Image (cartoon, rainbow, N blue to C red):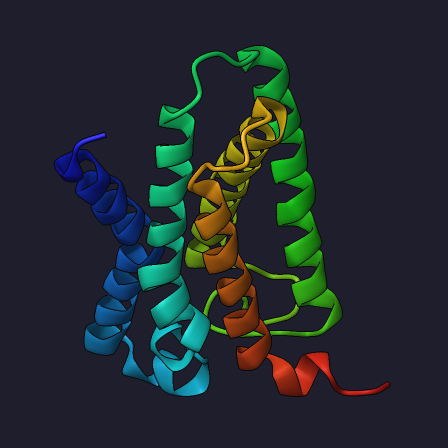
Length: 174
């Protein structure tokens, strides 16, 4: 793959993961600043700035590089499993958000997502499905030298940033 193609992957992922949220932030800052004072937003989360802004685009670069290194794969079964597991992952995270009562500007009340929350759910579904697809290709390829392993390291760092952001709530004993 050419560097300009990888840059495009980074930029598109950045725009859809962090960029949309930042645009919402700018909108609220101008038209409804009280909403921002009452709800945590993307710029108050390490996983929002570093995770959505840098790690997720980086993960996608390594995922795309890995796909480019595979000659053949069974598209339909992999897509089917990827979409199925993408739904499971998305629901698990969003039900976890409800269970742990993790409210923020996407879900200001437990179980009630606003437009940004709906967008985030849709983005998470497609991103999760894409990453599962890449992981399944990697696992089925029999190759252990693919760049996806670096993407997995970045994914682990993203999970750590999420745990860092929610450590007080997630580690609280009931």
